[in-house]
Image (cartoon, rainbow, N blue to C red; front, side):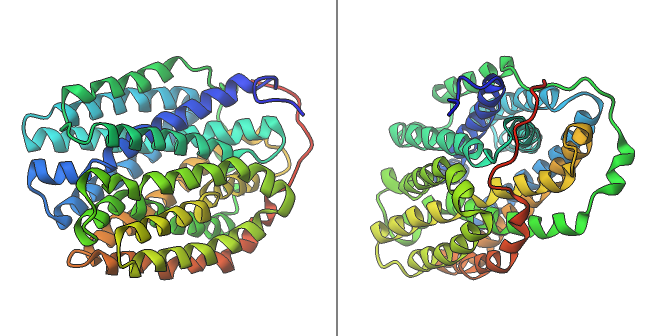
Length: 394
Protein backbone atom coordinates (compact mmCIF):
# COMPACT_ATOMS: atom_id res chain seq x y z
CA UNK A 1 0.00 0.00 0.00
CA UNK A 2 1.29 3.48 -0.89
CA UNK A 3 2.13 5.50 2.21
CA UNK A 4 1.00 9.02 2.89
CA UNK A 5 4.31 10.48 1.68
CA UNK A 6 4.87 8.16 -1.30
CA UNK A 7 1.72 8.98 -3.25
CA UNK A 8 2.29 11.37 -6.19
CA UNK A 9 -0.18 13.80 -4.64
CA UNK A 10 1.11 13.47 -1.07
CA UNK A 11 2.27 17.09 -0.96
CA UNK A 12 -1.22 18.29 -1.91
CA UNK A 13 -2.74 16.07 0.76
CA UNK A 14 -0.37 17.37 3.41
CA UNK A 15 -1.02 20.98 2.34
CA UNK A 16 -4.77 20.58 2.66
CA UNK A 17 -4.27 18.73 5.94
CA UNK A 18 -2.20 21.65 7.24
CA UNK A 19 -5.06 24.03 6.43
CA UNK A 20 -7.50 21.86 8.39
CA UNK A 21 -5.01 21.57 11.28
CA UNK A 22 -4.51 25.32 11.65
CA UNK A 23 -8.23 26.04 11.31
CA UNK A 24 -8.96 23.60 14.14
CA UNK A 25 -6.13 25.03 16.25
CA UNK A 26 -7.42 28.61 16.01
CA UNK A 27 -11.12 27.78 16.44
CA UNK A 28 -10.70 25.56 19.48
CA UNK A 29 -8.14 27.94 21.00
CA UNK A 30 -10.91 30.52 20.89
CA UNK A 31 -13.88 28.45 22.08
CA UNK A 32 -12.00 26.84 24.98
CA UNK A 33 -11.29 30.36 26.25
CA UNK A 34 -14.95 31.37 26.38
CA UNK A 35 -14.98 31.33 30.20
CA UNK A 36 -12.05 33.78 30.13
CA UNK A 37 -13.82 35.93 27.55
CA UNK A 38 -16.95 35.97 29.68
CA UNK A 39 -14.99 37.18 32.69
CA UNK A 40 -12.90 39.75 30.84
CA UNK A 41 -15.87 41.49 29.22
CA UNK A 42 -18.45 40.61 31.91
CA UNK A 43 -20.76 38.67 29.56
CA UNK A 44 -23.63 36.31 30.33
CA UNK A 45 -24.68 33.28 28.22
CA UNK A 46 -27.03 35.34 26.05
CA UNK A 47 -24.30 37.86 25.28
CA UNK A 48 -21.91 35.05 24.34
CA UNK A 49 -24.66 33.59 22.13
CA UNK A 50 -24.90 36.96 20.40
CA UNK A 51 -21.16 37.01 19.69
CA UNK A 52 -21.32 33.45 18.39
CA UNK A 53 -24.23 34.44 16.16
CA UNK A 54 -22.08 37.24 14.72
CA UNK A 55 -19.26 34.79 13.98
CA UNK A 56 -21.60 32.26 12.39
CA UNK A 57 -23.35 34.79 10.15
CA UNK A 58 -20.06 36.25 8.95
CA UNK A 59 -18.68 32.76 8.39
CA UNK A 60 -21.65 32.12 6.11
CA UNK A 61 -20.78 35.30 4.20
CA UNK A 62 -17.17 34.12 4.02
CA UNK A 63 -18.26 30.84 2.45
CA UNK A 64 -20.17 32.78 -0.26
CA UNK A 65 -17.09 34.92 -0.86
CA UNK A 66 -14.98 31.77 -1.17
CA UNK A 67 -17.24 30.51 -3.97
CA UNK A 68 -16.95 33.80 -5.87
CA UNK A 69 -13.18 34.04 -5.60
CA UNK A 70 -12.58 30.35 -6.38
CA UNK A 71 -14.65 30.64 -9.58
CA UNK A 72 -12.31 33.36 -10.81
CA UNK A 73 -9.02 31.93 -9.59
CA UNK A 74 -8.76 28.74 -7.54
CA UNK A 75 -9.43 27.41 -4.07
CA UNK A 76 -5.66 27.63 -3.45
CA UNK A 77 -5.90 31.42 -3.67
CA UNK A 78 -9.01 31.45 -1.47
CA UNK A 79 -7.51 29.40 1.35
CA UNK A 80 -4.50 31.74 1.53
CA UNK A 81 -6.78 34.79 1.59
CA UNK A 82 -8.72 33.20 4.44
CA UNK A 83 -5.63 32.65 6.56
CA UNK A 84 -4.45 36.24 6.06
CA UNK A 85 -7.80 37.49 7.37
CA UNK A 86 -7.77 34.93 10.20
CA UNK A 87 -4.38 36.19 11.35
CA UNK A 88 -5.55 39.81 11.37
CA UNK A 89 -8.85 39.07 13.13
CA UNK A 90 -7.33 36.79 15.75
CA UNK A 91 -4.60 39.31 16.55
CA UNK A 92 -7.17 42.09 16.97
CA UNK A 93 -9.25 39.94 19.32
CA UNK A 94 -6.22 38.99 21.42
CA UNK A 95 -4.89 42.53 21.77
CA UNK A 96 -8.22 44.39 21.99
CA UNK A 97 -7.99 47.31 24.44
CA UNK A 98 -11.78 47.78 24.33
CA UNK A 99 -14.82 45.61 23.78
CA UNK A 100 -15.59 47.23 20.42
CA UNK A 101 -12.15 46.29 19.10
CA UNK A 102 -12.64 42.74 20.36
CA UNK A 103 -15.95 42.47 18.48
CA UNK A 104 -14.35 43.87 15.30
CA UNK A 105 -11.53 41.33 15.50
CA UNK A 106 -14.02 38.55 16.11
CA UNK A 107 -15.99 39.70 13.06
CA UNK A 108 -12.93 39.56 10.79
CA UNK A 109 -12.09 36.13 12.18
CA UNK A 110 -15.67 34.97 11.52
CA UNK A 111 -15.40 36.01 7.86
CA UNK A 112 -12.08 34.19 7.59
CA UNK A 113 -13.57 31.11 9.24
CA UNK A 114 -16.08 30.71 6.42
CA UNK A 115 -13.50 31.36 3.71
CA UNK A 116 -11.10 28.75 5.07
CA UNK A 117 -13.83 26.20 5.82
CA UNK A 118 -15.12 26.31 2.24
CA UNK A 119 -11.77 26.45 0.45
CA UNK A 120 -10.05 23.77 2.54
CA UNK A 121 -12.93 21.39 1.82
CA UNK A 122 -12.66 22.27 -1.90
CA UNK A 123 -9.02 21.26 -1.67
CA UNK A 124 -9.87 18.09 0.24
CA UNK A 125 -12.48 16.75 -2.19
CA UNK A 126 -10.12 17.44 -5.10
CA UNK A 127 -7.30 15.52 -3.44
CA UNK A 128 -9.71 12.73 -2.55
CA UNK A 129 -10.59 12.45 -6.24
CA UNK A 130 -6.90 12.32 -7.16
CA UNK A 131 -6.39 9.51 -4.63
CA UNK A 132 -9.37 7.56 -5.98
CA UNK A 133 -10.72 6.48 -2.58
CA UNK A 134 -12.54 8.01 0.40
CA UNK A 135 -10.01 10.00 2.50
CA UNK A 136 -12.14 12.92 3.74
CA UNK A 137 -12.31 11.55 7.32
CA UNK A 138 -8.53 11.83 7.64
CA UNK A 139 -8.60 15.46 6.45
CA UNK A 140 -11.12 16.32 9.13
CA UNK A 141 -8.86 14.38 11.47
CA UNK A 142 -6.21 17.05 10.83
CA UNK A 143 -8.75 19.64 12.01
CA UNK A 144 -9.33 17.61 15.15
CA UNK A 145 -5.59 17.26 15.77
CA UNK A 146 -5.30 21.03 15.58
CA UNK A 147 -8.17 21.33 18.02
CA UNK A 148 -6.44 18.99 20.45
CA UNK A 149 -3.28 21.10 20.31
CA UNK A 150 -5.41 24.20 20.89
CA UNK A 151 -7.08 22.60 23.90
CA UNK A 152 -3.74 21.51 25.39
CA UNK A 153 -2.45 25.06 24.96
CA UNK A 154 -5.51 26.36 26.79
CA UNK A 155 -4.95 23.91 29.64
CA UNK A 156 -1.25 24.79 29.78
CA UNK A 157 -1.96 28.53 29.85
CA UNK A 158 -5.04 28.47 32.07
CA UNK A 159 -3.82 31.52 34.00
CA UNK A 160 -3.02 33.52 30.86
CA UNK A 161 -5.58 36.08 29.73
CA UNK A 162 -6.08 37.00 26.08
CA UNK A 163 -3.11 39.12 25.08
CA UNK A 164 0.45 39.31 23.80
CA UNK A 165 1.48 35.94 25.27
CA UNK A 166 -0.88 34.16 22.90
CA UNK A 167 0.39 35.87 19.74
CA UNK A 168 2.73 32.93 18.89
CA UNK A 169 -0.46 31.08 17.88
CA UNK A 170 -0.51 33.28 14.78
CA UNK A 171 2.72 31.73 13.48
CA UNK A 172 0.62 28.75 12.36
CA UNK A 173 -1.71 30.54 9.89
CA UNK A 174 1.24 32.56 8.57
CA UNK A 175 3.25 29.37 7.95
CA UNK A 176 0.45 27.64 6.04
CA UNK A 177 0.40 30.40 3.41
CA UNK A 178 3.36 28.73 1.67
CA UNK A 179 1.75 25.26 1.50
CA UNK A 180 1.58 23.61 -1.97
CA UNK A 181 -2.18 23.55 -2.52
CA UNK A 182 -3.79 22.07 -5.63
CA UNK A 183 -4.33 24.66 -8.37
CA UNK A 184 -6.38 24.61 -11.57
CA UNK A 185 -5.61 25.96 -15.02
CA UNK A 186 -9.01 26.14 -16.68
CA UNK A 187 -11.71 28.75 -17.02
CA UNK A 188 -14.83 28.50 -14.85
CA UNK A 189 -18.02 27.15 -16.39
CA UNK A 190 -21.00 28.73 -14.56
CA UNK A 191 -23.51 27.05 -16.84
CA UNK A 192 -22.61 23.69 -15.34
CA UNK A 193 -24.39 24.69 -12.13
CA UNK A 194 -27.76 24.01 -13.74
CA UNK A 195 -27.01 20.28 -13.71
CA UNK A 196 -26.56 20.09 -9.93
CA UNK A 197 -29.26 17.94 -8.23
CA UNK A 198 -29.78 20.29 -5.30
CA UNK A 199 -32.57 18.24 -3.69
CA UNK A 200 -30.20 15.34 -3.03
CA UNK A 201 -27.54 17.70 -1.77
CA UNK A 202 -29.98 19.40 0.61
CA UNK A 203 -30.71 16.01 2.20
CA UNK A 204 -26.99 15.52 2.72
CA UNK A 205 -26.86 19.04 4.09
CA UNK A 206 -29.36 18.15 6.79
CA UNK A 207 -26.88 15.58 8.07
CA UNK A 208 -24.24 18.33 8.14
CA UNK A 209 -26.60 20.52 10.15
CA UNK A 210 -27.09 17.75 12.69
CA UNK A 211 -23.37 17.15 13.04
CA UNK A 212 -22.40 20.79 13.51
CA UNK A 213 -25.29 21.28 15.90
CA UNK A 214 -23.74 18.61 18.14
CA UNK A 215 -20.11 19.51 17.48
CA UNK A 216 -20.51 23.24 18.13
CA UNK A 217 -22.61 22.63 21.23
CA UNK A 218 -19.91 20.34 22.64
CA UNK A 219 -16.88 22.50 21.79
CA UNK A 220 -18.50 25.84 22.59
CA UNK A 221 -20.71 25.14 25.61
CA UNK A 222 -18.99 22.05 27.01
CA UNK A 223 -16.42 24.01 29.07
CA UNK A 224 -19.12 26.42 30.31
CA UNK A 225 -21.36 23.46 31.20
CA UNK A 226 -18.65 21.72 33.24
CA UNK A 227 -17.72 24.87 35.11
CA UNK A 228 -21.09 26.53 35.57
CA UNK A 229 -23.51 23.62 35.93
CA UNK A 230 -21.35 20.79 37.26
CA UNK A 231 -18.86 22.84 39.30
CA UNK A 232 -15.72 21.48 37.70
CA UNK A 233 -12.50 23.30 38.73
CA UNK A 234 -11.88 26.20 36.35
CA UNK A 235 -8.49 24.87 35.28
CA UNK A 236 -10.18 21.65 34.11
CA UNK A 237 -13.19 23.01 32.19
CA UNK A 238 -11.38 22.46 28.87
CA UNK A 239 -11.66 18.73 29.60
CA UNK A 240 -15.13 18.90 28.07
CA UNK A 241 -13.36 19.54 24.77
CA UNK A 242 -10.11 17.58 25.00
CA UNK A 243 -11.47 14.00 25.38
CA UNK A 244 -14.18 14.83 22.82
CA UNK A 245 -11.51 15.83 20.31
CA UNK A 246 -9.24 12.88 21.10
CA UNK A 247 -12.11 10.45 20.48
CA UNK A 248 -12.98 12.35 17.29
CA UNK A 249 -9.39 12.13 16.07
CA UNK A 250 -9.22 8.38 16.70
CA UNK A 251 -12.53 7.79 14.92
CA UNK A 252 -11.50 9.92 11.94
CA UNK A 253 -8.14 8.19 11.77
CA UNK A 254 -9.98 4.87 11.51
CA UNK A 255 -12.75 6.32 9.36
CA UNK A 256 -11.16 5.82 5.92
CA UNK A 257 -10.75 2.08 6.55
CA UNK A 258 -14.17 1.67 8.18
CA UNK A 259 -15.92 3.31 5.23
CA UNK A 260 -13.99 1.06 2.88
CA UNK A 261 -15.01 -2.01 4.92
CA UNK A 262 -18.58 -1.30 6.01
CA UNK A 263 -19.81 1.60 3.89
CA UNK A 264 -21.04 5.03 4.90
CA UNK A 265 -24.69 4.09 5.47
CA UNK A 266 -23.90 1.60 8.23
CA UNK A 267 -21.52 4.03 9.94
CA UNK A 268 -23.98 6.91 10.02
CA UNK A 269 -26.87 4.87 11.40
CA UNK A 270 -24.62 3.70 14.23
CA UNK A 271 -23.49 7.29 14.77
CA UNK A 272 -27.02 8.54 15.38
CA UNK A 273 -27.84 5.96 18.04
CA UNK A 274 -24.57 6.23 19.96
CA UNK A 275 -24.48 10.05 19.80
CA UNK A 276 -27.97 10.39 21.26
CA UNK A 277 -27.08 8.00 24.10
CA UNK A 278 -23.86 9.96 24.81
CA UNK A 279 -25.77 13.24 24.95
CA UNK A 280 -28.23 11.65 27.38
CA UNK A 281 -25.26 10.86 29.66
CA UNK A 282 -24.19 14.51 29.43
CA UNK A 283 -27.68 15.88 30.11
CA UNK A 284 -28.30 13.67 33.16
CA UNK A 285 -24.72 13.57 34.48
CA UNK A 286 -24.67 14.02 38.28
CA UNK A 287 -20.97 14.99 38.30
CA UNK A 288 -18.54 16.52 35.85
CA UNK A 289 -16.36 13.36 35.35
CA UNK A 290 -19.45 11.50 34.08
CA UNK A 291 -20.20 14.36 31.71
CA UNK A 292 -16.62 14.18 30.43
CA UNK A 293 -17.17 10.46 29.71
CA UNK A 294 -20.29 11.42 27.76
CA UNK A 295 -18.40 14.02 25.72
CA UNK A 296 -15.71 11.44 24.96
CA UNK A 297 -18.18 8.89 23.55
CA UNK A 298 -19.97 11.68 21.68
CA UNK A 299 -16.79 12.71 19.87
CA UNK A 300 -16.18 9.23 18.53
CA UNK A 301 -19.83 8.77 17.55
CA UNK A 302 -20.22 11.83 15.33
CA UNK A 303 -16.68 12.09 13.96
CA UNK A 304 -17.26 10.92 10.39
CA UNK A 305 -20.59 12.64 9.64
CA UNK A 306 -19.13 15.88 8.27
CA UNK A 307 -16.35 14.41 6.08
CA UNK A 308 -18.69 11.82 4.61
CA UNK A 309 -21.21 14.59 3.88
CA UNK A 310 -18.62 16.51 1.88
CA UNK A 311 -17.56 13.32 0.07
CA UNK A 312 -21.14 12.55 -0.91
CA UNK A 313 -21.87 16.12 -2.04
CA UNK A 314 -18.71 16.18 -4.18
CA UNK A 315 -19.57 12.80 -5.69
CA UNK A 316 -23.02 14.05 -6.68
CA UNK A 317 -21.70 17.34 -8.07
CA UNK A 318 -18.84 15.70 -9.96
CA UNK A 319 -21.00 13.11 -11.67
CA UNK A 320 -19.21 10.68 -13.98
CA UNK A 321 -16.42 13.09 -14.90
CA UNK A 322 -15.07 14.86 -11.81
CA UNK A 323 -12.11 16.45 -13.59
CA UNK A 324 -14.20 18.34 -16.16
CA UNK A 325 -16.68 19.53 -13.54
CA UNK A 326 -14.20 20.91 -11.00
CA UNK A 327 -15.73 24.38 -11.04
CA UNK A 328 -19.17 22.95 -10.36
CA UNK A 329 -17.77 20.84 -7.53
CA UNK A 330 -16.11 23.91 -5.97
CA UNK A 331 -19.37 25.82 -6.25
CA UNK A 332 -21.34 23.03 -4.61
CA UNK A 333 -18.80 22.60 -1.80
CA UNK A 334 -18.86 26.34 -1.03
CA UNK A 335 -22.66 26.35 -0.89
CA UNK A 336 -22.81 23.04 0.91
CA UNK A 337 -20.52 24.50 3.55
CA UNK A 338 -23.38 26.85 4.49
CA UNK A 339 -25.07 23.92 6.23
CA UNK A 340 -22.11 24.01 8.62
CA UNK A 341 -23.29 27.38 9.92
CA UNK A 342 -26.93 26.44 10.18
CA UNK A 343 -25.79 23.64 12.47
CA UNK A 344 -23.52 26.03 14.32
CA UNK A 345 -26.50 28.33 14.94
CA UNK A 346 -28.43 25.44 16.46
CA UNK A 347 -25.45 24.19 18.45
CA UNK A 348 -23.94 27.43 19.68
CA UNK A 349 -26.78 29.93 19.70
CA UNK A 350 -29.83 27.74 20.34
CA UNK A 351 -28.05 25.64 22.96
CA UNK A 352 -27.02 28.80 24.78
CA UNK A 353 -30.44 30.43 24.46
CA UNK A 354 -32.46 27.38 25.55
CA UNK A 355 -29.94 26.65 28.28
CA UNK A 356 -29.52 30.23 29.47
CA UNK A 357 -30.95 29.24 32.85
CA UNK A 358 -29.84 25.61 32.83
CA UNK A 359 -27.45 24.21 30.21
CA UNK A 360 -28.82 20.70 30.76
CA UNK A 361 -31.86 21.85 28.77
CA UNK A 362 -29.56 23.29 26.12
CA UNK A 363 -27.85 19.93 25.56
CA UNK A 364 -31.21 18.15 25.47
CA UNK A 365 -31.89 19.82 22.09
CA UNK A 366 -29.10 18.02 20.16
CA UNK A 367 -29.79 14.83 22.18
CA UNK A 368 -33.14 14.50 20.42
CA UNK A 369 -32.35 16.03 17.02
CA UNK A 370 -29.23 13.94 16.30
CA UNK A 371 -31.49 10.89 15.86
CA UNK A 372 -32.47 12.45 12.54
CA UNK A 373 -29.20 11.15 11.09
CA UNK A 374 -30.64 7.62 11.04
CA UNK A 375 -33.22 8.13 8.24
CA UNK A 376 -30.77 10.37 6.34
CA UNK A 377 -28.05 7.71 6.25
CA UNK A 378 -29.38 6.08 3.08
CA UNK A 379 -28.45 9.22 1.11
CA UNK A 380 -24.77 8.37 1.64
CA UNK A 381 -24.76 5.22 -0.46
CA UNK A 382 -23.05 7.25 -3.21
CA UNK A 383 -19.82 7.28 -1.15
CA UNK A 384 -18.05 4.33 -2.73
CA UNK A 385 -15.92 2.03 -0.66
CA UNK A 386 -13.18 2.25 -3.26
CA UNK A 387 -13.05 3.78 -6.72
CA UNK A 388 -10.52 3.30 -9.55
CA UNK A 389 -7.42 5.47 -9.29
CA UNK A 390 -7.28 8.49 -11.57
CA UNK A 391 -4.45 9.86 -13.65
CA UNK A 392 -2.30 12.34 -11.74
CA UNK A 393 -3.02 16.02 -12.34
CA UNK A 394 -2.44 19.25 -10.51
